[in-house]
Image 1 (tube, rainbow, N blue to C red):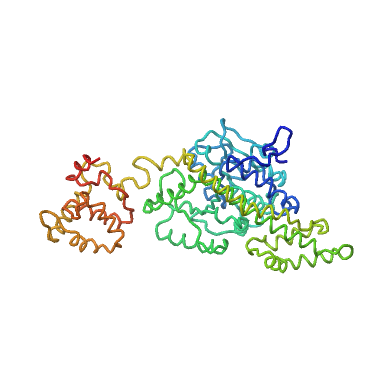
Image 2: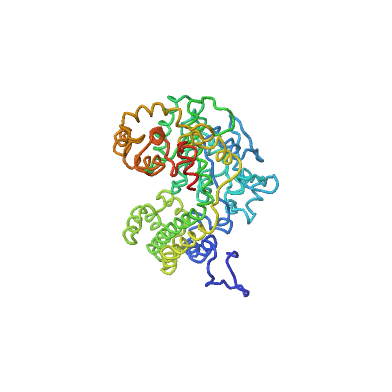
Amino acid sequence: MFSWLGKEAGGRERAGDPVQTVTGGLKELYARRLHPLEDYYRFHDFHSPALEEADFDNKPMVLLVGQYSTGKTTFIRYLLEQDFPGMRIGPEPTTDSFIAVMYGDAEGSTPGNALVVDPKKPFRKLSRFGNAFLNRFMCAQLPNEVLKSISIIDSPGILSGEKQRLSRGYDFCQVLQWFAERVDRIILLFDAHKLDISDEFSEAIKSFRGQDDKIRVVLNKADQVDTQQLMRVYGALMWSLGKVINTPEVLRVYIGSFWSQPLQNTENRRLFEVEAQDLFQDIKSLPQKAAVRKLNDLIKRARLAKVHAYIISHLRKEMPSVFGKEAKKRELISRLPEIYIQLQREHHISPGDFPEVKKMQEQLETCDFSKFHSLKPKLIEAVDNMLANRIASLMSLMSQEESNMPTQMVHGGAFDGTTTGPFGHGYGEGAGEGVDEDEWVVAKDKPVYDEIFYTLSPINGKISGVNAKKEMVNSKLPNSVLGKIWKLADCDNDGMLDEEEFALAKHLIKIKLDGYELPGILPPHLVPPSHRKPLQMAE
């Protein structure tokens, strides 16, 4: 099955081969340690299909989910800055298919039935959802710089009412769950005007159980409401999400208007820019974190496979050898919650590692318990050894790879428009204010600062640290921050401040009070004019 593992000339697996890459190590661990346990206890029939080579080699994927007309397809168009095959945008439910937007040398599309037989794509196991799904699945390929680093999955808009279940012809939530297990990021999009979470959307979100760390929430079209309305919308969204996503942590919600059209309401422009930058930074870092994500998912899968093995072997042990099998099966299914508690105590397993009781009961209804296998300790030990020892060596290899390779980030499209030039995030703000100006930026407020300076008893044009402290502590900033400001402002390191250095200190205090971060090193445009020449000579 695993033809992608290293083999000797005679066809035998090279058990002692050193793992050269993290990806290779993950493949080996899965094939030789975890897959035998999964296969023996029919893990793939209950939880998730077996992993393939493409699952380890594929680029990071981002899944977009939301109700219709929340801007999912427009969001992709905004990131790529170009149209893609199969794209349809409108106020009505337009995207009726799952579209995998991926990199290709030439623009084109591949239908679902052809896609699931391509061994180079990570979608082969989707064939189990049948033609009703495959007819609504396609891959759009195009030469785009963004897609060299990530792939994006566009999903159909979620409807309300029974139409969701009746018209699709396949289990929509099961498909979402399949994608959720394999993607690196799940983005839930909400429209500022349509916050209601329908029953179907609620079920879809619940299908992401166990993948909470991948979820990000985007409140889109926020420029269509004013500040007061936006506060109410945000509060209502958090309340709605709290009822659906059962986690103690508050989900990160990014607020903005993610398309390339002018803002309808500009009073929150700065908020939207900061939020967009944070979201872009999160997506840009996915290639760098891809190996960690795959390792994390493999660990989660291993823990679930172990628990599944304990459950199946326990049910097999409880079955009678000849008579009363059906009655015993019904009894065991009804007692499954009690069996969970018993196994937790026997094997010291956390309750959070067990599959959902109700779903497991439904799956067990159609199974013949007498065909289940009893516990095989060697298979469990192999997985335990993987978790206890082999994972640690992979983590070490991962650190080596990161130090030896350049940082991988997403480039192109909307991502490049936020990094450089005057429209880059934070350009000309805070410590960057005045970077393009010939005049010293502090000069415009210096007359006010000079008045304060001459009340602090300067001697020979300078004030002592004690006198400077009396004024600086009025800002109510903590001593650690004021100490950094002092270090930046005392350009000649003489323990005193002249009038320009004092003005600079006041300017840095203003920067901090306005909510900006202080620079680690004083930028050249902030150096007081009378101190520039000595500093340049010193360099």
